[in-house]
Amino acid sequence: MMSIRLPLSILAKKQAVGVPKGHFAVYVGESRKRFVIPTSYLKNPTFQAMLRTAEEEFGFEHHNGLTIPCNEVVFRSFTAQMASA
Image 1 (tube, rainbow, N blue to C red):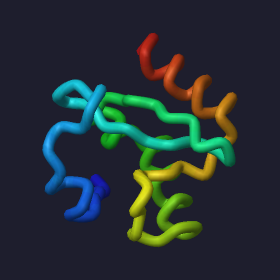
Image 2: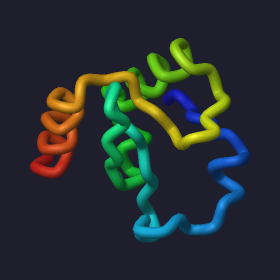
Image 3: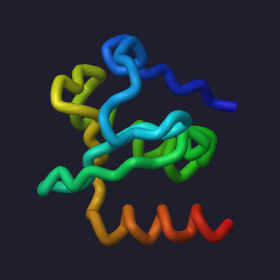
Image 4: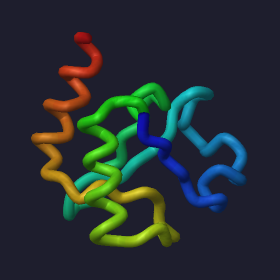
């Protein structure tokens, strides 16, 4: 099982505005559309691949939030699939 390490700047912040406990915000695509997703997604191999892509593209410094370099339509499809699972 792969372990995901989030930057301390993300972990150290108190619950962000509009983010319920057990969730976190990510920004997707060129328009940086904000999604609030459950932390359970961190266990999903597809989401882990998205995080690896984000690491390769942006590194670990995310001063403006965790950005996932993925097409928004693809990400919406992924979250819909996760919600129905």
